[in-house]
Image (tube, rainbow, N blue to C red; front, top):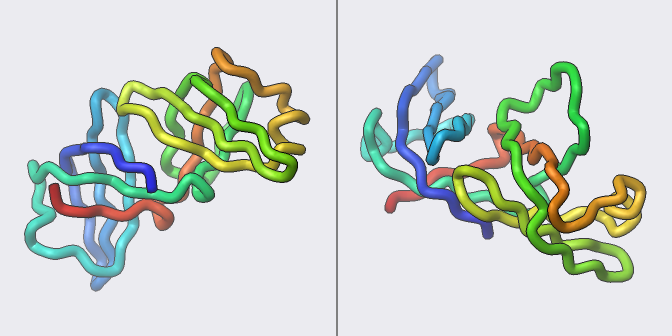
Length: 130
C-alpha cells in the first residue's frame, strides 16, 4: 500500500459526501469520501493511502482528463514480470508504486529516468490518521 504524508487544506461537503484537498510537499491531492471524522479538520496531518493498482501512468499527457490527481513523477525502477510490471515512481510528494501490465509498459517504452504523469481517481485514495 502506498502512503504519502499530507496536510488537509480544504474540505467541501454536500450532505454526507466530502471532497478533501490535501497538500504534500508542493503537490495537491483530492480525496472523495462518504464519511469524514472530525479528526480530519483543516490543518490536520494525515496519510494518503492508495493501492499501486489504482495508479495509472501516462506519458506525454496532453489535454484535460476527469481524474483529479495528476502527479508529475520520474520512473525510478521497474520490475518486469511476464504479465505485470511494478513501477517505482518519485514525485515531489515522495515515492510510490504503480502496477501496470507488462504489455502497457512495453507499448509506452517506459524506462528508468522517464518523466510520467501518475493518475489517481479521488475515490481511490483513502485517508488515515498519522
